Length: 134
Image (cartoon, rainbow, N blue to C red; front, side, top):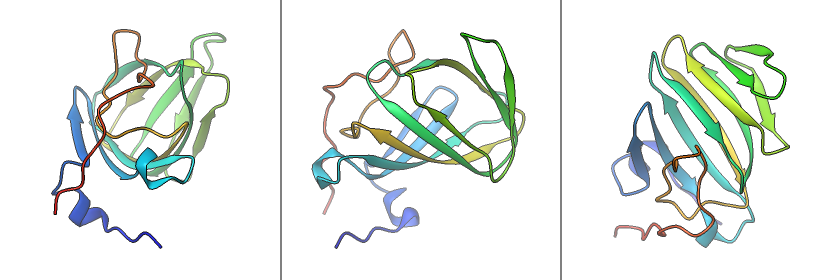
């Protein structure tokens, strides 16, 4: 059994901070579950152009408000607490935060832990692995 506490993980190298967002990676590839699980904060005013070419992602909004738009159809979907969106086709999308949003995210294949978005808004398949601090 794996047990981790968000508040503790936020104080370790499992917390990754980047432009417009931060993510605490609670479950990673080296946990051998076949997916990764993160609690991600999207900062108020963030306008993120993303394209997870190598990963499928499900995102559940815990708090905050914003929108997501798939670039292929241009339809804007409002995000409020209780909304889930699923990028089941490696969708190129734009995520905007009206207020700070707290999101629960699942990635398949799982992330290694140190990933940040590349120039295309994707995560690389091979990235530096988080080594748990003792």
